[in-house]
Image (cartoon, rainbow, N blue to C red; front, side, top):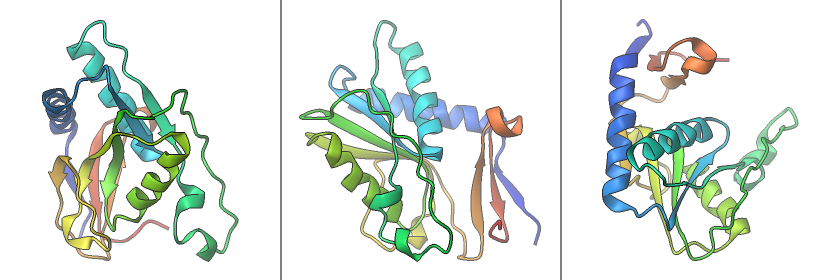
Length: 181
């Protein structure tokens, strides 16, 4: 089987816009922060922040980048030493509403690690989850997103890759039939 483009650039932009509108419907961004899980969720969080600020002129939305490397339950199982990403949380989430953001929700383990890592920055009043892609039939933990760009049903050998225009020239989502090495 060949790799398949699941979300082309035009549809990608529409999905981001829809996610931003859903967030506005449910959150007052004077009390809500976006926190992207490094590395890929932080890019989605930054895009959502930019779109939200276009839709809500004059609103300054907190948007952080959270590294979960050492909060993962599998970080000791890697053959090579891990190199963590930088945390960029210039604010505390104490008693605030937080929207955790990641690109692809697969097993739920990264989100669990993100919840643990988030507590180092305060105890939020509530936490919601926004994802671009939900691979819903692959969950290992009871974690479900509140905001979903698109559901993708795939088998275990397949891999969902989100490509960003800054790195790949276009925003799109691809279903790879083999995991990349």
